[in-house]
Amino acid sequence: MKSIVSSFLLVLVCAWSAHGNIHVPDSVKQTTTAETEFILRQIQNSSEDIPHQVRLKCYLSKLYNREGKYDEAQKLIDEIPPSEYNLLIGEVSLAKAINLKYQLQPKASKLFFDRAILEFTLTKRECLLIETHIELIEYYRKFDLIDLAFKEAEKAESLLKINQSCDPVLTIRYLNRLASVQNINNTTESIQTSYRCIDSCIKYNEKYYLAISYNEIGYSYQHIPNLDSADFYYRKAEELFRSQELILDFLHVKMNRMRMYAHKQINNSEIIPGLLEIETEALEKAPTYDLAECYRSIWVEAQTIQDFETAFEYLRKFYYLDLARIESDVAEQVEKVKQQEKESQTKIQNLVLSSQVQTQKSELKQTKTIVWLVIIAFIILLAISLFLFRILKQRDKLTKDLALRNTQKDELIQEVHHRVKNNLSFVSSLLEMQINSLPEESKTEELKNASLRIESMSLVHQMLYTQDDITTVDLSTYIPELLSYLKDSLIHEDKLEVQLTSEPIKVESRTATAFGLIITEFVTNSIKHAFNGISNPKIEIDLHKNKTDLVLIMRDNGVGMRAGNGSSKSGFGMRIIDIFSRQINATVNFSFEKGTQLTLIMSYEE
Image (cartoon, rainbow, N blue to C red):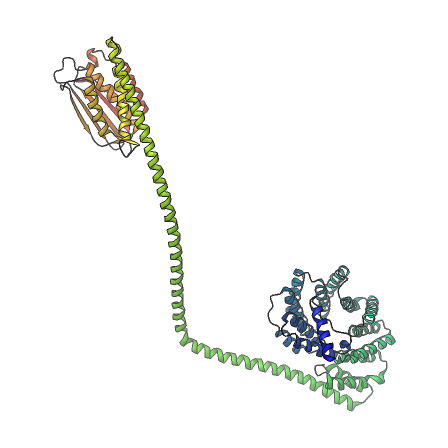
């Protein structure tokens, strides 16, 4: 039967823990000892359910704090393993904050309160968030930050109105803590709030918070003063705390009542017996209770009734207790000094050892650094190599694509030049046919000149499509072929001597065409008009370049234009020379000493 009941209770605990709460049956909550034992059994039975075990330990730590067992609470919290669940992180943070508050470590406590609020807000656990704000009310009241305590009370009240499905105990705890804060500035409001809390405690059978409310309202009535009511509620609080075996709380309330008797000079006969009962209870059941005030109060009251023997005895106890506290503080300081001395000796030993080991460490560190640098350098080089390999691979592919496209383009341009040359040759052939069919000599002569000009242009395109470089023409190759063609086309004998001096000079096709037409006009004009009566006709052509210019000099040994030989500086041929020289930004000068000389100068950069 007992095992069935235990199983049922465990199911209840697990069910409630899913909502972030621990449910303890009312029958168990009659005494703190029974409740503590119940939670310990649940912890043992839930060894495999880590989240539930964490919640149980957090709950038990609060019970330990309630009993003044702060070290045990801290030890229990330290046993909780790290959690990756935000909700559990929040609950553990709240448990740590409460424990640190009791140990009077406000800064550390506040940090954990803030962490708990953050985690509960993120996980939307409103009931746990309300609990945290209620704990903060007591935190700020304990450290005399009353305005902040009221702000936390407002936050808790606002959340309680929104979340009415939370455990009613939260409302009871809120009212209880609000009354304690109101008691500082407004006793009337505190009493009203305490009565609301008492009604709720009776309704939900919450004896612990009912006892706290009785003590709170007793404290309020003491300050009105309404000493009968204060005495009545103090006694009810003592009765409830004793019934729950909360001896530490019982002693605090009884000390409040004895202090009231002493200050208000009532029930004087009960003061010393009451204080002696406090001493006995503390020594037997609550060793953590501080008896200093109790001893001092017995000493003062014994003096009042002239019981000097008792006064002296408790004065001695008070000083012994104070001395023990001082000795404890001194012992603690001595222990700290010893620890510091030990640490200093350890540091000295470490310094002595470090002088021997430092070099080895430094060398080892350098070795490790070098190894890591080598590894990092190797990784970087490997990464760079892979990156460069990929880039080179992409570049090779692009190069091949570009080469293929350039080849296709070159073939296309060569084909264009080939077709242009063929078309020009076809036009030249048509002109030849036309020349052969015309009877008039003058018309034949003009058509012949047109044919020569077309052929000079055709020769440029022929050179472009028959060589690898399809953008430039070498004048040292082009001019000899042009002269050979002109010589063959104009005369059919070998009397004319053509002397060419040239160095390799590459120019664009447009410039080559202009040079070809200018040379054609000069040579045809010399052959037709300059050599009448000249026994050894000769044409000299000199093509060279200097630092910035390209220079073309052409001269013949004929009679020149001044002899009235039918040539004219304003004729069609001269117009062609002028047009094409300006087209390539060249200057042309003529001289007529011992024949005709043409000098062409053009800016040139390789």
